[in-house]
Image (cartoon, each protein chain N blue to C red):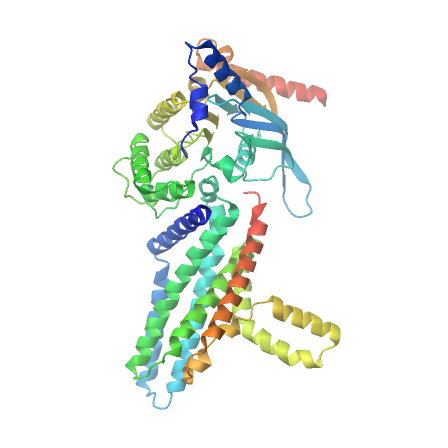
Length: 262
Length: 284
């Protein structure tokens, strides 16, 4: 119990420092500016008349929430560890009785929480803009945000793991490709598998299961068409799926970082 | 992480009781060294297929509890690499490093150390108090005791009144003073200081020297590298001189300094290095 409390204190302290730094560095201004641009775009569409375009507007708003929150998460996560190393702030941190894995988990929590703040900001703006046109997103919108939060955990962990083996630029590019292109990849695999040879099928299916299927966390269409909320069992299963992939990527990152000379 | 009672009592035997005094001396002799480096080899590889460039060659040294040891050598001698190995920031090619008997880099070893990096950089948007709170929590401290200790340390290093000022406004010297404060947080058993007065003005340097002398008097073991021979002369019990990753000389300060004249240390430093260069040339 004492060990768990100790870990919680370590992770809390590291995440708190990350959040405080980012807040004071005004990182979330980017999210604010993007949110204002969303309102502006919605208002522009409004001036041309939106009668009959409810479905389109909902779809656009939800897609924008998904894409922007992903971009923010990748940008926050990509710099967590590399900046600590290049700015040399990592030395006094790792001189304390904490492991390198502790540092990665603490930094992950900071970046994830920061991404969640951005997600909620976008969600509030989108919901407000839609409400302006008399449109509501229904109860399933809460589940949409919850699943986005799960997906962001995977994206942050994946980006942090990549940031330990790639340059910051390559990390951002690769993470965005994997995060945004996940659905396209899944659909492509489903289409290609039936017409592939058995060896190719093994490769494609292997890649399909090794990479996280982020499209599973996307409720955009269901929210747009006003579906009923998803069952709690499905949400629970996705939570476990997200937890496993997050743990896998953080473990790979910790393994790489464990023996890295600083 | 307060200093262990064993370390404190080992230095203060009951002199009126010969049995207890000899037991204390025996215990001190049996206690593991504060820092032990044995046949340490450190190398760097610049690229996946590039050969390893070795910067530390079978370096061995030992620091006894309560001792203050200066680690000297010209630029590129391997001082920082050795200190990084002590802190667990890099994995040595071979050799063993331990801190009070615990393998270097482990949480048990790090719990005993207060460390000041060569170039101390901290989060620029945090205040000194927030910075000390962060390191304190990582150290296992908390509550009002941490707040009190943080305030006391800021006062000791001359940063009183600047607790709520963001570090981005701090000069290099002020950051270095904060670095000393974070190193002293939790009263470590061993202080490892890499270029302790780097970037500090003469007044600040003097202040730091007095602070380190106070720390020394509490029985804390100090292992530090410096280019400031004056500091070394005034603080150290012993110096270890390295060149090209090898120990070239090691001796007690009394013998080196001859009545505390700093220039004598400078002469010793230059003379020993010249002799080491001559030996290396002759071997070639």
